[in-house]
Length: 586
Image (cartoon, rainbow, N blue to C red; front, side, top):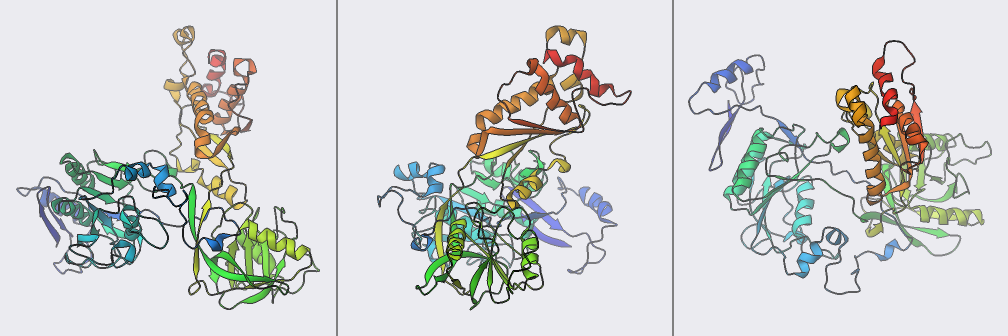
């Protein structure tokens, strides 16, 4: 069954479903797929056959990390950061030097940029409010609902809309514009509402965007493939060779190692783009009020969690601790003299144990509503699966500490909560946490002859997540180093040359790089701890004893698990003990 035919200057293709019957809804017949593909390959004019795949959008989950001050409610509209001058002072533009291009008069006039994504909400006033000639979004194609070139269907997800806003948002009440507000946008919709798109539609969209005269093609999508011969990567290469840049997301799998970049970002000549955190994080917070004793109501901002049955809840606060520096608030069962919390909103400080553990301990005393407050700058997503809990939320460290101080002074603090769906939202631009974080450096084991940081068991994202949940975040770093004969080959000739222990020298080079560069990633070079297991621990021991124990300031502490300077304590494992003899040559 033929899915689609594509006949364009850069791509002539047909996508098919191999099935046992010609009905359009027939389930693909996998048993005969290889045989039928071989038959197709023998036909005249068939150059290659590729497997149809599903591509994904990059994850657009919001991570609440911005810092918040108590005057957030005054930031409904972003003020000029430069005192009202016309210079572009939008922080992302300053970080990427877009402000310099804008000062030079470059705003994107006469350029056409195609966005291959979930579609664009072109009715949004910041995106022109219309579709077609004379509109910001003036051309495109719909590969989800049909060939409706005149007006592609709307964006049911929002991903393509935020990409379009980043590129070309027009003046709006929030006080920012896109990078190039004078460009013309094309909307090529390849994703519906389910989050995936077939590779034939994506290849056709790239080719059609080129045919339609786009000057730049942007696509925030991809799949973990890594082969530049895949059809999407090939069509991108052909487009770039014709002089049209293709800017494509590198993917979400950086934690899996350097070789997990997505396709078609791996197309030869494509511009693969990763991301870096903004120095200033915009936050949309729900607006409610609180009152202290008989004073009037004061605005405050909060972020709803799950569940979120906050509509019309008006109850006094009860703090499980009056210590604003407590590190394990509500991690243990609450004291026996704790009152019935059924008619309170329980205020709990984040830290040490999970939100579920804190919520369970509060629920045991009758709690139904919980307001967490952070122990670091920012706002986090919170949730509770406890059956008794009806609603959870988080507010800032500053707000929570202020309430605790009022409660400690004997005042009554009442929260007047609102439905987060219907409430007003306030926009705050909070500074990212700028205190440098401790750095944990992982050196993997494997007998000095095998291993790689691409191994999923060495994925450090779990360690980082736990550190965040504890309110003590760290930056985790892993390194590769030469192994086996390339890293630890011992011969008399090499010993005479002083060229042994290349693997240890690789590790040492990585530690020097961390000292020189980690501050740029928010890390503290004075708080580096190296950590290794098995042969990784053995490597650490060598670093501790090498150069007669000289301290080069590359790390502050060391953690050795299942390893030491003498290697394995069993017989006949020379690959552990050989490097000891090279130690003085490193």
